[in-house]
Image (tube, rainbow, N blue to C red; front, side):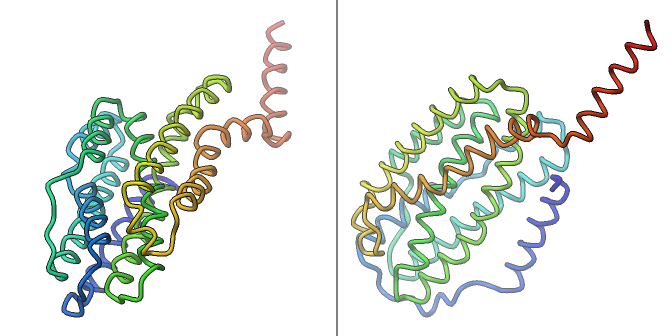
Amino acid sequence: MSFEDWVRRFADNAERRRLDGDPAWEAARPLDPALIQSVQRFQAGEDGDGARLIHKSDLVGDPHYLAAIRLFVAEEQNHARLLKHLLLSAGASTIDGHWSDRVFVALRRALGLRLELMTLMVAEVVALRYYRAVRDGTADPLVTDVGRRILADEESHVPFHTQRLGEGFAGLGRPARATVAAGWWALLLGAACVVAYGHGSALRLLGVGRLRFIAETATLFRPVVRDVLFERCRSDRDEPPGQHGAEQRDRRGHRHLAR
């Protein structure tokens, strides 16, 4: 899938959202205080203009990738909007931020595009498990609808970033990939623990214990690490003999003619 295809996919998603309209905010019910606090933190994390990410993506020199990133940022901003309206409809308010989000954002901004995307991917995978809990863990139709809408977008974000990161690490040797994987896993497990314990009361309310949240987030992350850091390396090693063999024969043939 090319980044031009991703532009079309994100644009199609935006048109689908326009046609679907907003959730039924008028059907809002009071929310449990633990869920309010949890949603407030995620809303603050989703909010932002994405200017630094867009700037770094512009430096790549691929107009299709830049356009796709702009549409990705717009989806994240829409998530913040949905969560804000969910809170306001329930009589709650938003917050300016939370220390965990500020640390995460500072870490992302201090890095280049490749490492920023790795950090962002950690947030996306954690969000996958969180919004699945929001979608499935409540009898409130409005909360379920908001969780469903956001989760549908997040499920596209992971393969989108996986593709770019896979290309970014294409020239890295296997030992270096293993080192990167270890650091990436440490970041993921740290983030999952912060969410599991910082949002523990809300997660219990949604039917997900802390350890289960961490374990299932790790399960979601495993194929991401494989696809970004090892799948391409394996593909190169297991390249079909016809193509690789033909290249080898061509090189041998050129050497033979040169002699």
